[in-house]
Image 1 (cartoon, rainbow, N blue to C red):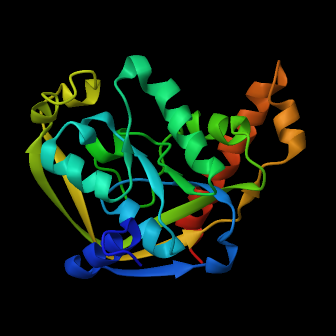
Image 2 (image 1 turned 45 degrees about the horizontal axis):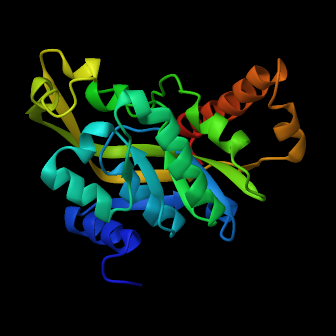
Length: 239
C-alpha cells in the first residue's frame, strides 16, 4: 500500500486518535465493482471510518468550504476527497467527477444529509432528510455492475468539542446559509463506533429505463427511501 494512500492515512488517523471501530455484515461489501457508498454523517471521522470498514479507498464529495481552508484542503485532498464547487457550478461538477470515478471501478462516497448534521449537533441514532443527488448519480451513471451501499455509523461512545465559530467559516464559503449564524461548529470525536453495512442495491437496466419521463421521480424516491430506511433500521436495531 502506498505511503500516502487515502486508506493508509485513514487507518493511521484512527489509530492515532485511539478510536475503536467494529464492522458488521462485511460480507455484504462489493469488492470488484463500482460502488456508491451512502451513510449518515455527524463527524469529520466518518470518511476515514468508512474507508477502514470497506478496506478500500473511497472518493468522498465534501463541502465547498473544505477546499477553501488551506490546511483543511490539504488534508481532504490527501484523503482522496473532492470538494464541491461553488453553488453555480456544483451540480454539473459533482456529476462529472463522480461519473469519471465510477467508470474506473472506484468507490464514491456521499453523505446525503448534507451539512446540517455537521453544523447542528444531532443524537447518534438520528438521521435527517436525504438529498437526491446520490440517487440521480446512481441511475444516470453509464456504469455496469454498479452497487449502492448504505452504511450506518453508530457511535457508542464519543466526545464533542466546539473549536470554530460558524461565522468564521462563512469567510471561506459565504454562500452557505448555515454559517451565517451565531454559535460554534461542533466536532464529534468517536471513542467507540460500530459500522453496520446494509444490503447493497444493484442498479438494474429496468431502473435505468424507468429513469425518464414521469417515472423518474418515483424511481429516485424509491432509491432514496431504501437507503434511508436501511440506515435508520441499522441504527435503531444494530446487528
